[in-house]
Image (tube, rainbow, N blue to C red; front, side, top):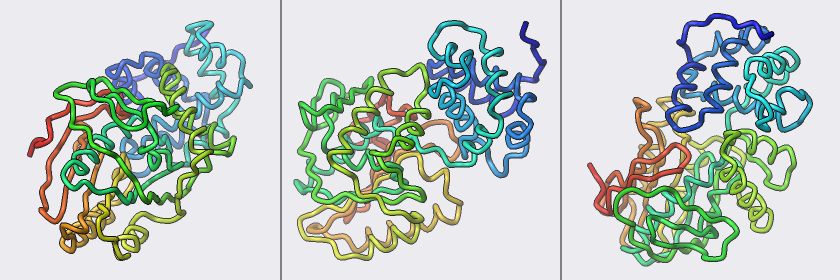
Length: 351
């Protein structure tokens, strides 16, 4: 019989469980709630959770714990946990208690590393934004991505899309992305990328087994279609390896923006769910550098900035497009954090 430990429904694990349930992932919600109740069984992990430095929400602390448990289930070293993830029983507390008891050190070490989901579902919204620029400039793109992780979204021009009934990208691509689309379909335009490179503190190799394990563990366990899509994107990346440099986003971006830009090519700075991991000073530096580069942009050498990020209040995820030399900024859409749905505001966006 599992001993239920009373807990006040407050704190980051409870908060993220509520969000997971709101997003339709009842399994992840139950896992996090059971983890909160059974956390005392893992002293190291419990100490890390209770004394997390800074903002645990911005650091995705709960998602690190959820991914560690998913990784253990995928390894099949704790039978009762793996059985839970396979749907063979629903005793969440017993399974999570076993995992916390037997794998405290593993979970603690896993949680030390920044999440790297490299969610390709977000590529649909970013591609839609790029096509708004392409429709105006009729130019190919030079992509510069911050926080690239494995670099899967640098391959966005190799994916196929269904955006509210509008098809775009590569029709026969092994990676097909079709978010639930609200609002008018976006204008479709050619999506040509002549150069794509990114940066990450810890670039991941799509051909590495440990990399695949880590990325797949961060996929919510009850989202099988999302997991399959990630596996297809990893396979495609093995054929077309993304260029991801090791380094910090701020100095790397400064270097890339200082490099000469070819005539007839639109330079595009893109990022998704990255700013929350930067300090306020670093975010200000990124904004300032891009604005300065925008001031140098011309009709022959335009610049665009596409941001897929939480609002400062973390109440919604917005797709924002800023273009130069006109300096126009508009919010094109509100999005699901993983790109599952897009509420498109139209090409003019909202202020």
